[in-house]
Length: 254
Image 1 (cartoon, rainbow, N blue to C red):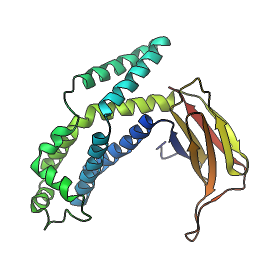
Image 2: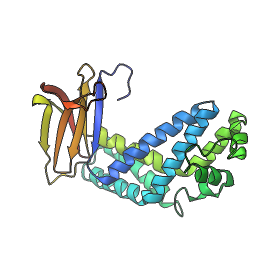
Image 3: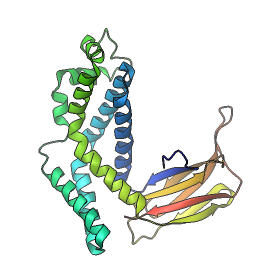
């Protein structure tokens, strides 16, 4: 919830590893877009640092397979509940699947074919290792015109576009396909048992900004707990609130 008039803070808790990775990538893609749009050399450094994190996640996970599995799962759900709206969404899911099936090889592997990008990746493992005296070619690139830098950033990030779009679409469906309930956490604690016959994907807890607590969610796919913690003061550890905390709970099933 990013609206400027929004009065709540929403905490999300993924209920399986696939959605956990998707949310991490979603955040990284958003950061990459933000820093890429910045005009300073520091912005471009930050964008490339984020892109390296994205590449690391792709190295550790078969994201193409995971996204295709989720697209297929969504298509089956929509096929069983067909209506005009679902037909349009199903069409989008089908197009995304076709694009990903058409991708050959490991996604993002071609990015490392750039000598400059390889050098940046290698030196980035050293704290502060991409200073101008370490990588003069990188320093030269950072001082180029904005159109050149943007062209290169787009070239390096393009291989991830189809998966980024698919992940955004999937997470949007998950977040918006379920109804919410108003709950109260007595003395700052709430527990929920999830139906074992349903594959819940995510929990969302929305708390009014006027309540000086943050939601700490833990658990698994069958049972979760929410503790409302008061932020630390003077570097002490956060403590659980003793107040009854009202909040909005959404159990996302799609």
